[in-house]
Amino acid sequence: MSNASQTDQPGEQQSKVLEGVRVVELAAWTFVPTSGAVLADWGADVLKVEHPETGDPQRALISSGMVPGAGQVNHFIEQPNRGKRSIGINVGTPEGLEVLMKLIETADVFITNLLPDSRERLGVDVDAVRARNPKIIYARGHGYGSQGDEANRGGFDLAAYWARGGIGDAYSPLDGGYPPIQRPAFGDLFGGFALASGVAAALFKRERTGVPSVVDVSLLNTAMWQISTDIVAAGVTGAPMPKFDLSEMPNPVTNIYRTSDDRHIVFVLLQADRFWADVCTRLGREDLITDERYSSAPVRFANRKDCVAELRKTIGSQTLTHWEKQLEGFDGVWDVMRTALEVHDDPQVVANGYLPRLVDGAGHEFAVVDSPVQFDQRPNAETRAPEHGEHTELILVEAGIGWDEIAELKAKGAIL
Image (cartoon, rainbow, N blue to C red; front, side):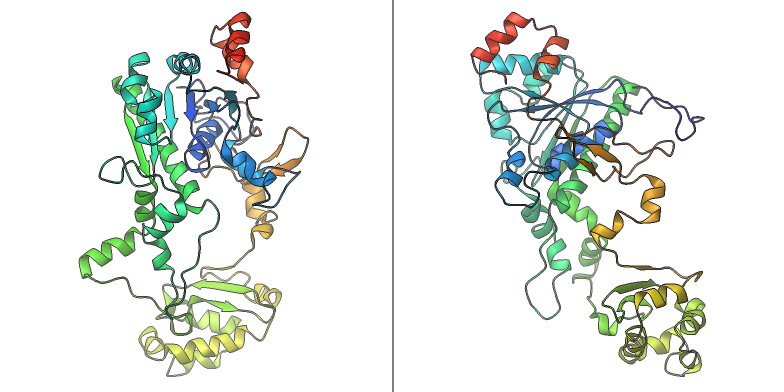
């Protein structure tokens, strides 16, 4: 593994932190492939193994009409697969399995989301892979963990992460209505980043000790980590963390307020007394500063419903643009709830390179969200996702397989 020099400056040519690391990825959908995308962002050579006929089933979501974007950028593929190379292998055939094993012999990491029964049936479980490469790091993504009665149960993030892990309930409304549904791949993306981080730590351990690890990440555990404050508190107190309606938040200036043009401003003034006079002045409500019902945090708590109502009335009387001008230079923490489209033009996003622009195989330019760790102040993502089996022949030639054998493998349906 090569590391970029700490003296490198942004924009200079330099090695990426995982340059020289090879990853073989036998996975589909978003969770585990996201880990491969992060490793590719960090410089690893990631070989995405896909079935010669079907490929990653996520490729078909756009053409099936299930998500928008047909005929344009396949964003469901680009975000979790940028920077990789694709090879079409039918691992279910003896010849295809042997091709996979030849690649595994050259790799540092093997990552998969196959269920335990499938890994054993196909001959790609830990023992089989380590028999061909004893030093390889073996990374697995799970729905419900590597142990227990449900270890062999498949899981998508809406079920294993949002529902089972407690997040959906944490966001359920106080009136007993239906809980909100998560956004697409909400838990997958976090879980994939966690798996990539585990792989990076395992590479460091192997570099220091020579000992490879088996790395496991589950959607269930990542959800629990995401709301660990709630879960730990529930275990200590024997009850769920309390929920508060926005109309009576305990601290009225740690809350969300709607403007007259239906935008939302978020205030996070945890040291409320420190900022109360200034925020009231900026809102044009100096009368609230000395009002005995709101003059300190304890009395604002006691009168929180009325206090929130006053702030709602005031903020709701003007547009977002008006309040942005009024709050300019305010030392307290606040921000505007932005849409996903507005994020593309956010000055901080642009300045930090958080949305690198790529070009797909059809020549369409688009942005992906960069993985959230930068090294030496440089963005990571540089290359589009591969087409299905785009690099099959190149990768096989690199592995020392001759053209005659490649033709024979194609004839047998072992490769694309």
